[in-house]
View (tube, rainbow, N blue to C red):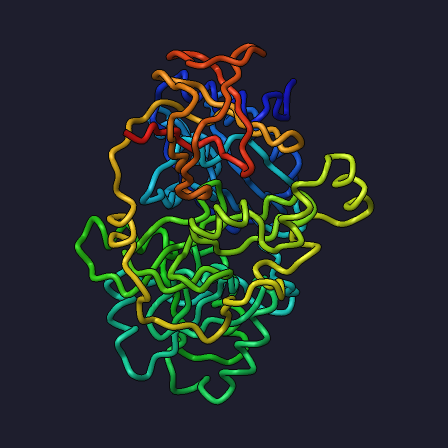
Length: 447
């Protein structure tokens, strides 16, 4: 029986578009004793594959941690697959505020030693002795208490684009680094201060709250459902948001906006910006913040060195990265010395700009004419499916949550291997493009 993906991301995206159904991006976790994680993993794959549920899921002897995309019309059936297990009956599903049908394009379920790499020996303390869970308004009320210390248990690249007012934001690259740092920093406040903690969806705080109670902290609280659930309550219940900026998420979107406040800067020029991107150099893929202007100038790369590399012949690029570890193993996430405006740790709450103001600046008359289907990295060729006519000489805008807003003039159009002057609706076209496009990117004709 098939227990793995057989479709490419591009094929899956095409099927999602053809189905024309809305999907929900959601996350959930549960700590429980699972005797056979491998069998548990296989059973979940069979059930979820039948529902066209996609996502990135980790299972271990200690439980499950999932970020997923589920067809909206299968939501209740999906919930039933969870509640077939006693430890997931009534489980809270954190549904994203902003939806993207392409947030996940594969179903990946992996068996891990732990569902979150925390570096802790769970045998040394009671992991069930957790902190008190708070809803959004309760969290706000305790946040206003002068005897409260609030700690962000996410990584530096997450807190840089958004965090709660007055929060301690450790300059760390992973969760396990933050635990001993915060424990040492707050040694003098164990008895008389409220330790208020939060993370993206709540899972990191589940373990952290138990750890800090074991370390002697008397008053430990955590945000129920994390920032994702907080944002939902802010929107639906009219609670004032004490979170400023954008919530970083670990799917294709790389973030969902909670408030219009932009509290971060483009790492290359310093302009107000909170859009993350990955360097277009396949030997780098550094995660960093890049504004639309720098994205155009630097062609989605993080440095002049990477910019030069992406213009080399493919064979030379392959030779340069032969034997190298790729991705964040080469550089720390957002920590390259080439990034002059990188901030970590002691971050500001005061907005540098408003997202709605930036959006107003780039308003233009445009018409949606297509969507991205693929990007051939080696040849730097982009593929789009047209819904309207496009001609050589037309000025277009390519727009997406990671790609940003990119304007170009079409110099050549290829349809079925032939160069044409005008392509029609339903044509699958390709043309050279110096920057990577994503499956959620849209193609607009500027009028």
